[in-house]
Amino acid sequence: MFSSAFRRVAALVVAYFVFQLTTAVASPAPLEGLDKQARDALADLTPRELVARATPAPPHWVVYGDKYVSGTTGPPDASAITGFNVFLLSFLLTEGAWDKAYEWTTLTAAQRSAVKSQYAAAGIKLMVSVFGSTDVPTSSGNDPVATANTIAAWVKQYSLDGVDVDYEDFNAMDAGTAENWLISFTTQLRSQLPSGSYIITHAPVAPWFSPNKWPGGGYLKVNQQVGSLIDWYNIQFYNQGSTEYTTCAGLLTASSSTWPNSAVFQIIASGVPESKVVIGKPANTGDANNGYIAPATLAGCISQAKSQGWNAGVSTWEFPDAAASWIQTVRASSWPV
Image (cartoon, rainbow, N blue to C red; front, side, top):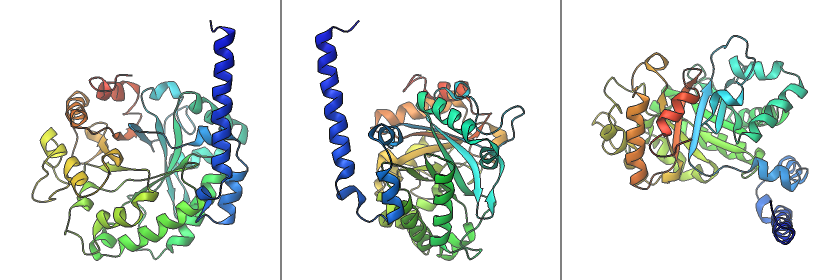
């Protein structure tokens, strides 16, 4: 048990922290560049709520959920994903919510609040993933600013912790039109969902970081222009060829000549902060066309990366194939649960 003297000291420390946090939120600097709606949203939050919403430090252990799971509406019980700290409801499309994102809307406000409380107690952020492989917003002519406004409003309406931008408009990237769309979209999304209060991640395929490969600059341009607005990248190191990113060397240090300089440490060498390079992998062979690495083998790759200073974490597609046992195996040798 704590002594009364220790309790008094602890109380003073907590009071000081809350004062500092409240002062920081009240000061103009964090609110610069935000519109009135975003400023008002911040002003309505208590210091405790701001702490709960703060962007977590790496490593990030991220799992997508899109599949229908019998008996479960919305996200799974937190105990089913012990070892993960982010769950992504998939997907919110330009035409509306589908699959797990839609299921979340069918819960009552009280049910959603209970889930959020359970997840917060377990240290798990609950976010929505947007677009995915079936949505091509640039090629479809969707306005990036209006699209960002709609998505941000949905996130606020359904009390989520942020947005994962799973942009897969390959024709637009090939044409060199994806980058400016993404830059405008991300800028507006962050203006509506302020940093420190909401999380924004992107989930590009790894080849989009290959230098001099894309007419518009690829994701290196996106990172250069708006990387400071993106908390991290859930990079898809799969579905890019039967032998791509399937060994520790090919994943971490030297990608193939097909997608040059797109392995983890090559992406970092191109200017992307290592703390933002989250390794995305399918949970099993049925969750992707190719790029699978068995969890125990992936754990060895993660251990190698950690020994070289990397600490960003792992994302995986998808629950329930990726559940507590999967991530605990992947983390076992480096970050045991």
